[in-house]
Image 1 (tube, each protein chain N blue to C red):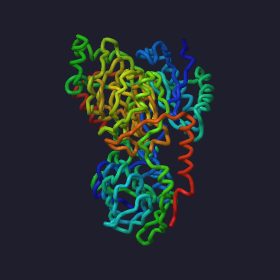
Image 2 (image 1 turned 135 degrees about the vertical axis):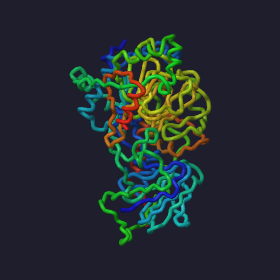
Image 3 (image 1 turned 90 degrees about the vertical axis):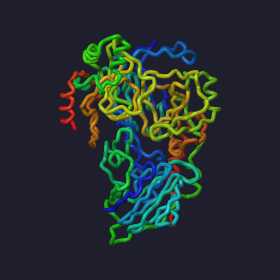
Image 4 (image 1 turned 90 degrees about the horizontal axis):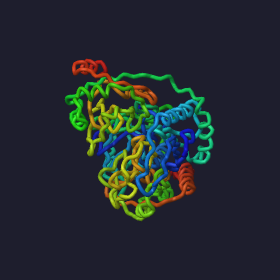
Length: 246
Length: 326
């Protein structure tokens, strides 16, 4: 079996290359459902190290980077380079992963008003797990989450891991419109919708904080690698903060 | 400075350039013109840099007036435009006099998008160094949204840094048009060429064969984020969700029901469905001209061929013969 230190490469398109840090389980590929490796923090740390190195020492011809749980998609200018050439360069970068210094750990607190119309799925989540609302809120706010990556839409951070006692599958039918600031859960993930978009995560609360600022720099409240905690707030506090952030 | 006054916005008209690359780590997809080839040619026709911002109109164009005149070109699908009632030749530069009105109608025969390029480009507040509108998040372009009646857009100063159509001076203009032969070679395709996707081998041989043999139909759910197709469902291999990973432009992902979705310019940056194939770069602009009910097929090519086709297209786009001056 490959170790986390031996990433594998996969051509994704004629202008992109995927680097995986996970451990594939080859058993049954193409026949039965491929057994997936678990999302490990180690794999994600390797993603962040490679991303960091590529940001510090950009490769000419690389146009974009899409980090995820245990992979990094590297988009390149196909007129300038081929997959093989990029792979050779990336292998040299990978040899240096251990020496990469990740940015200083940033801790971010996100105030959330749970329940009521802000958390339309909270009751259902509690019913599925046979727990009281107060307990669900306590659980959600009890751990420090890792920002595995930002994806889906600008500023949407994939946070893990939700306490197992709260883990709930996503909705069978996604909502057409989820209000901005909604806090959702799906499987062992949690996250905040920065914009009003369609979405299939179960909504348990809402934050009055702006997750993504549409100024010319497009600043996101959260970045990959950040640590996040949710703090329960009252409806009154929500209203106050909402005014402040408007 | 010149302006464009929006008298009627059309069905869905947005400001687009060639997209903003490099913000994947923020979850921001490039966006940009759905038919980048048409935008680039339009810009060349009016004398702009290829990445200047223009207007992307969808299925039905709008009505625009130019109080201070302009030099413009319409490219992409033919939307039967008229200038003060006189038919406008597509793929050709055009001098608009002070106060004239351009009416851009519905897509005539085929295709989905028409581009209005104006000399100097359209000037908007940049967002992450780009002018493209990202509709889903309401960012970029003109106030992050599709144009509305009453909007007034500023025409930029262009690469010369000065506006050539102050009312006191008639802009220099020699009619430029695209060579017919080049247009033929760049015509949008209905047989999309693809390379294998990162999860191709999750799909049994029979399912892959079926995918390449089938005709798919573009559904009503076809927009800048993606195109949902209907046709033969690939049930074997469509395992539903996997661990989310970065997704490429043009990725053909197979959702839980076994039907393909092609990810497009305003795509989500990461996704959790297996991808059976990926449309090649040289055919991206063809995706931008697909409309609901169009029938398409996929044709597999190897990496070498995909690259050769892109090189060939770029060579044509950069060539002197592309544009004929009269």
